Amino acid sequence: MQLAVLVLVFVSYVQCYGEKPQEDIELSRVVSDAWINDPNRLKVGQDLLLNWQGQISDRSDSKDISSAPLCTIKSTKLNQDPVYKAFIALLNNYEHRVGFSESETEKEKEEIDQFLDAVIKTKTMENFHNYLIKQKLASAPSATFKKELYDLWFKTYRRVRQSDSSPFEHVFVGETKQNNVLGMHNWITFCINEKNGVFNYYGHSKPHYLNPDYKASLQFSMHRNFVKPFGTILFGSSVEFDFGLYTAVFLRSQQLFKDQQRWPALVVHLDKTRILVQCHQFAGNRIGSCYVK
Image (cartoon, rainbow, N blue to C red):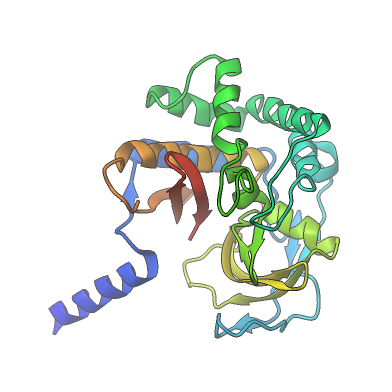
């Protein structure tokens, strides 16, 4: 009987999370230290208020069961910190519809350059960079590392049509295809676009009893007609933390699981909380997506 229960638990786990998660102890330590010591992280309940409202029982049933916005940002960091400001400047540079080619103006190229300069200067990104150097996954000189980050995140690739997408757009901004929202795994993008009327919060899934107050799964719409039935987001994390986390997890997964078609999630710890980070490869060796789950 006990064996049957264990088998059932394992099958349910695999169905929920896919391949069995793996842990890189050193990466988990770096992530935990970055989380604890991040001066730009907003604290949920203090700097960032979240009005959860309606709880969604069926993800396939897309309807708005929350009458008020989710986010209220109390902190002034988004208007003052150079990384937040540089990140926010990028959000309106993308064509959200997959199948429509992207083109960068000189101003947009300059904004990307300013964003990467600001991120690399942070202590949080420095810690991730040092880890990547140690694992032989990044170059030591800052200028070279900046170019590697640009190539990894901002070079376009084809999802439906030539140059219609990029890893940064997919993960941090969000895209649309048919009636669906693709990607979009960042709380800042969500909260800003909710305030501007681009996103509409529908509700949240029942939280797991181990989930912290800064991790939740949402349902929302984008530009009214496109729906994200389920997406998990870390709330309050700084831009440099998310950017460093997903960079490190993708490159380390690529190194560890190079012979595997499907990558398992990597286990990391945010202080004492266990989090799974999943990355997918796309278009050869590019980031297809990265997100927490």
